[in-house]
Length: 400
Image (cartoon, rainbow, N blue to C red; front, top):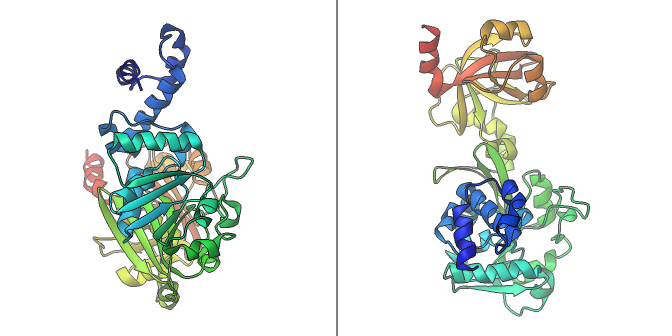
């Protein structure tokens, strides 16, 4: 990148990139497509990779590669899980995971078949002054076949799009198909970390991979972002870790399917003062009976993954709502109890999508109130709630 190019990008880093493209003729000495790619990368980095903004010479790849890349938080989380001196990232891409691994391992091989991405990675490694990463421009499975060494860890994040561009989740539909290469992968490592879609069937994946020691279900900001499988020595029943990342901390809930099968659950006949919604990692992993047993909470129904109590549970792993009232789910009732017409709608085990129900109730998204449509026992019903931390403010507003 020339100094003129860098100065242009920094001067326009907060601007609308579509407008910049239209004004390309005004800047004949600037490769506007490259500048827009860089500006959009920097804009994404503000939220997704904030530390990269400290490196002015870092060059961002095309949009698809940015979208497919891990966030800085999830990449660092993956690196924190491993104890390895030698790592090979077999699906290099933008290289965010490689950079995180390089911070804890003695040596990392970045393997990527796209020459453009490899050139970018070489540039960015120099820009970041990282000396313990080698760039290998090759098909990962062919490259691995040529290795006569065993790595402490192989990391694989198969591409989850079909030839037509459709999103896929099952291992056999991804590229590379690691099930076809399972024996080769095992021969070259002590452990393997496989990143999978949040839509993956965890139990089926464990059976397909074999020798799964641990499963990490990772949630960030209310969304399940990835599922990681650690494959190594046979351990029997895999441990499932529900990791919710927030404010630099990790909420860790660990269980096995055997634990869940043997848990004792209590079901509610009525909803108490508090309503509890598990975080995204728990909702994906499914320790639903255990949550009742661990916290002494009543589950609303076998297929309703919400919990209630009259006693406040302080450290619940998820959101806690104060229940304000039970309501009939119709427009007239909403006008009575929510005259401003703004509320968030949550649907759990109820025969409608949240957006559909929101329209039926005449509500707009927003405000501090939540309408929870759900099933208690066999009864379809609704509740108006607010987040516990907003309850006192809600009372003040009601008493005005």
